[in-house]
Amino acid sequence: MGLFSKKDDSAKKGTAAAAPVVPAAPAAHRKKEGPTPTRKEAEAARRARVNPTLTKKERRERDSEAERRGRQEEIRKRDSDPGRTLMRDVVDSRFRLGEVVMPLLLVTLATSLIVGKNPQLANYVMIAFYVIVLAVLIDIWFMWRRFTKLLEERHPGYPKRGLFMYGMNRSLQIRRWRIPARGSTAATRSEATMAFSWTTDPALDPATATSLGVSTTFGTQAEAEAWFAEHWTDLDEAGVIAVSLLDGQAVVYGPMPLSA
Image 1: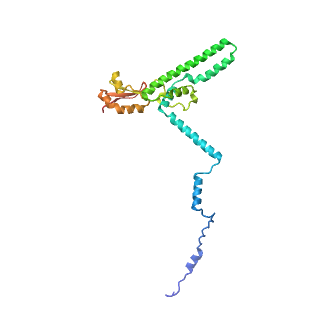
Image 2: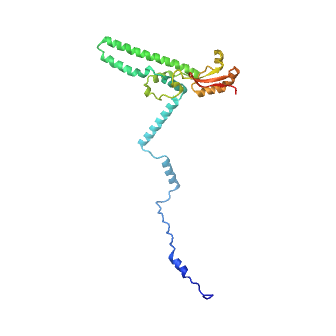
Image 3: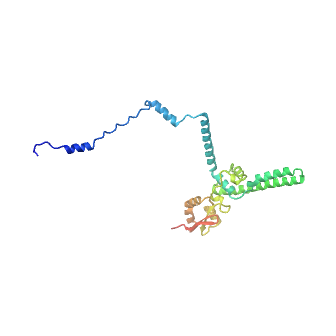
């Protein structure tokens, strides 16, 4: 082969023929759906999405739902009042005669209609009616007395206006239909374990215990512990060595020494 002879390009040509270059497919052109909206049109569309146009029926349904939610929120705030909460706990703490007074009165009325031709039996039915009403009133009086005592212990000086009627109306309702339903607070467990209290070691005389506030009862454990955190120095100065927290008659914890 000569020094300056032409190179044999057959191999390269064969390779190029074996792998032809495939041109890339042109990107598909997307057809424009319509003219570009102006800024005013875009703002109007956005406002329509945020505040959709409603029919009269849809507007009434929306306003009715908003009003219903507002009433529920108002009732929830009203029923979360400390006085009403305590009254519900006291009423629900045990069986009340008012729970069955309405069915009993209906039975008494039906019986009086049946025995109306017999004056003697009718008199007995009316006496039974008045006895039921009197028993319910006595039960409500004991309930109110218990409530006022607890209210003064847990919320001294709290206004009692409207709470008597609230408690009476609740006590006259069938337990299953009471709204809000019975809670799970400490006061609903029993009359004997409705309050937390502290005992001291050594025991203080009644006058000293009253002046220091040791005889105070609390509705929750958190209230009792908050009181202790504020007054433990006074107990220490009075010679108290240790304290115990009681839930009714049960010991929650203690004796707990005041000094480390």
